[in-house]
Length: 113
Image (tube, rainbow, N blue to C red; front, side):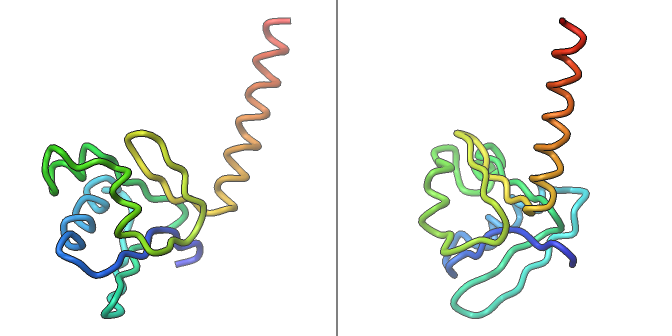
């Protein structure tokens, strides 16, 4: 895997359900799970996401995405959080998306001028 990104999870009762949620939210990405005993590294190429909606399907309707921080001891890549999702993204992909967004904004500004 060239640009692995994703969470490192403390071993606990919820780990298998969280891995299943991550796999469900990233159907076109190969998810690699590395079990180190006390923790599990979950990673995919360039970008993976987990949503509160999917976590709730596995962990119960009252699960809050902010609770995820309690089981995540570390992560690789950039962690981009919103009120209902966490995305881990490689620095290279993030820079490419920022560059593309900047070009789009310049083009839109030129069209409206």
